[in-house]
Image (cartoon, rainbow, N blue to C red; front, side, top):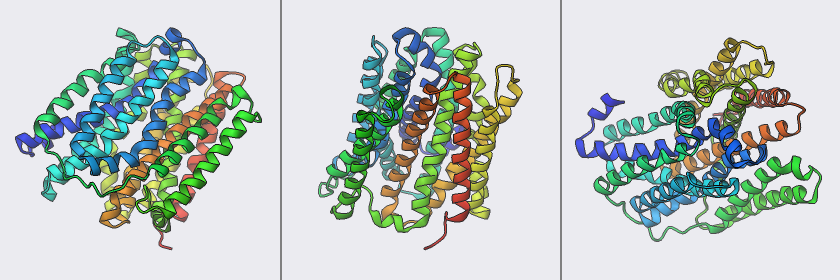
Length: 455
């Protein structure tokens, strides 16, 4: 990455650093919390459901707001939206470090989700306008994308070190200097993008999308507490269904929909939305369960638990480059199908874990999961973006990212629901991993049967 940075002009290099730091912070916040959950529980109290909300409050809002923030970046200017997201992230992170209740932390995590959703599309727009030459833009996007793997790999390890050394509050304080540096560099180096004041905002689509995600997540996470057949849960399931129907109606009739429904006619896009959701169900479910198991059942420290996840996280940082070369030679379908298969095999290994199982088996399982995910996601993104016209790439990229984040929400909710209803944590983890393996195998079959085929 350092060598690539040297190939970009000095002023542009500082801007790229600032934008990459913002993206790093957004992704880091998705993974760093996983190893801090036991410490948060010990300090603030609450049950497993509360810990699910600590993770999912961020992801629910992030997923629900992604598409709209792209519109705001076009209407208000990408620099304004990006700076606004940074300020929000800065303030909410600092406040998260001093909360005294789980409810307050959950609320602030939702605010962080708004900030994160503002940063992602705005940073992409700023990159596109700041690097008009295709060659330089490709290099800049390559560096920016590489931050994904770095953040995913660093999250559990950095989080574990901070939690053991300074307490769980330090993982939120980490965002403060990163946001400040990114803010300074962006204010100094970025130029405002042209504003498209005529571009309308689909408020109805935004509200119904966010409400559907939140209602569905509530049903899955709170079902064990209220009872799966209770009026509250049935009402929330009904609300989710109603919001989905309303979203479809609004998008079909709207002048400027968040997601044009005509794109569903493209089998690569429609299948890709499902595939992106499924792979993130698996990844987020594993990231939620394993740190809890390592710390609560195996007695490891947060730092050791974070290091134990490295076999899964490191392939996410280094394999995408290899995956890109494979896709350029043989296409995306076979690498995606293989990735889903590897992920399924990896989750089946810890599904048979018991208290005396050697870490060697865990290592193999996590490595297979990491290799599988690093095959699926780059292949998926490359194929989907190549299947649509240039003017549709913004809507499609937002939709794919939103579907993946929805998968993250559902993965945590699914694993949490199984854990809550099981006799022991270990048995619940085994059952949830078997369910994840079935979903991943389904993703492999769906990819081979449908993905990339024209209707």
